Image (cartoon, rainbow, N blue to C red):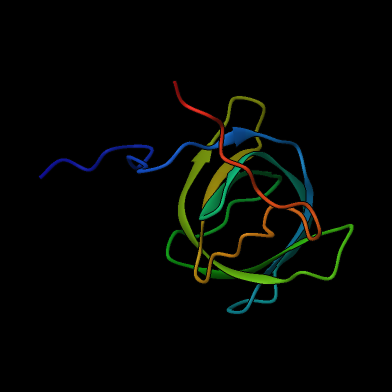
Length: 109
């Protein structure tokens, strides 16, 4: 079976730049970075260093107290020597992607 990259999603993501803190529970790696798109169940994040797929991380919007656990689904090197990682939230919440700002899926016609 061929693996799709990036993985096929069952929901739409919306473009949104959100400053977040990433922290690895496994190796104490830490980075402040930003999302490029978000959904109730995850986000695409740009990073300066690679993050290992299957790694569990904490993701927290810089402007807020909401802290969520996520799983790194993929890590792709980009031409500018940065990385794009896909995060899947382990316990999705409606108030992600920003505390106090409910997620609203785009309307489909």
